[in-house]
Length: 331
Image (cartoon, rainbow, N blue to C red; front, side, top):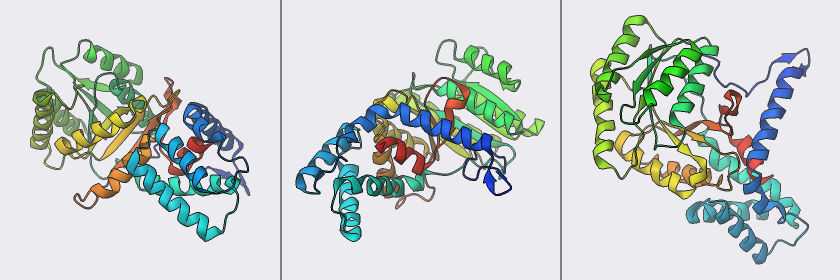
C-alpha cells in the first residue's frame, strides 16, 4: 500500500518521535485549528466554569447549530454528551470540553479511512463535484501526493462542459509530470473510456477521471455522470474503484444535500472537503457522519472523508483524522 497521507504513526528515532515529524504534525494541527477558529468561537465562552445545567446545554445546542451541525446531529451529540457527563460525574462546564471532543471523535471516526490504491491496477477514481468546489484543483493536489508517494498516475480530462477545464487539468499534468488523456470537444464518457483503457495498457497505478462540475438539480448532467460510470465499467468491469465527491466546506447544510444527491446517483465511496479555511460551518461533518451511519443500513460500502483542504498550498490538502478535526473544531 502506498504511504499516502499517512500521519498516524510518526517516525521514531530511538525512544522519541522524529523532530521533523513532530513539527509537521504540530504545524498541520495548528493550521487546522486556525482555519476552524470561526467555528470554534461558538464554543469558546461555554467552558468557563459555568454549572452543568439546562441553560448550558441550550447554549451548546445553539453553538452546534451555528456551526452547521444540523438539528439531527446536534441532538445526537447532546444525548451522547449527557450520558458521558452522567457516567463521569462531571460537575463543571470546564469538564465538558474534553467529553464533547470525545463524542465528536466517536461520531466522526467511521469517516476516517486511508485511500488504498493497492487492490487494483490501475485504481480508477472518478471525481465529481459542483462548479466552484475546487474539484480540478483538488485532483491536481491529489495527483502530486500520489506521484510523490511513488504511484504512476494518468489523468482523464472528462470535464468537457466547463470552459478551460481541460487546460487547467493539463497545467496540473505538466506540473506533476504525469500523462493526460483528453479530446477536443470530446464526449466525457468517451474520454473516460480511453483513459481507463490507456491506464491498463500503460500499467498505471491510478487513473483519475475529472468529471464535469454540475448541480444535483441538473438531472440531464447527473445522467451524464451515470453514463461515464457505465462506460468506465466497459473498459474495466471492476471499475470505478472509488467515486469521490469534492464539496465546499463553506456551504454548510447544502453540502449534506449534495452528498445525498450524488450518492443516490453514483454510490459515493469518499469525500474531499475543501475551503475549510475561514469557514464557520465545519460542523457539517457531524451531520454527514450521522447520515453515513444511517446509510450503512442500506448500502454495503462505507463512506469515507479521505481528504480535507484548508488552503491553496499543496500541503493544505491532507488526510482526514477524526480526533484532530474534533479537537480543532472545539478549540
